[in-house]
Image: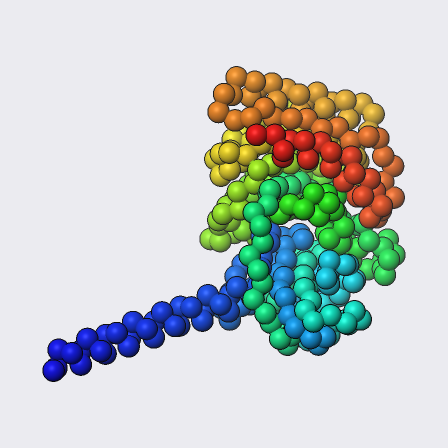
Length: 365
């Protein structure tokens, strides 16, 4: 009799644990995450990288979201409702605040996606929850995946001056990663993506630093926050079918013209690039890599850059393990965004150039 009671207690405890596990799993299935994010307790998540996002489905026409800039200055997110862009929100420093979402279309269910418009260097944005009546999202079909590695161009730096004109506010007030070329082409191709990009950074030196005081992309790539904090490594669970690398604009730049600047070192650029590609392969051994030149580099400098990229590709010509590294050259452009960066229209032009090229590579077996 005692033995049966013990069996019953064990059985009840087992059911309890199963129930708790199921409830926890169901709660987490309400939300989908993309990009470099740090998941917290109670379904909170820190949006870290450019265009990192949280998405959810809900019933009815009432929804507010709670957001917080985790640094001592403003941040921005962009919102997409039912597949349509509905604007960018400024999040002031301080405690988490509630932001109502205007829902004009009367439907039974809706889908909201919250994208970080600013970049990792601007600090994290905490998504602290929603008042919406959540419903479990159907599991999406398996999609192709792409990672876009780069600098300010890939971040969407200075592309959106619709609310704050260029030359006013802070340097990141015109960021809108939602409209950067990578997210635009990814939505067009219906693929998942992650941006690993930092404004001003290069492959062997940065826009205004000879790799003396600041890290470069190879130094921070393996860290979740794309900074020197190695205590929070990036998990690389996102395995891209394609990796696009657009780095060199800052290596080739003259800096601010005030700080001492050495001539461009082709050997350092090429050797660092080769080692960085090996790092990418270490974390994504089955991926295919595409090297991009820069829409912000012109004339003789572009010739130098393209020649370097060809040398880098040549260094892997006997690689029988990975697919051939490809080179893509943008058509010449006069960027119309802030600080000679592409604006939203320019990003669309860049995306349109890349779409058929990337589509072909992604469809190859």
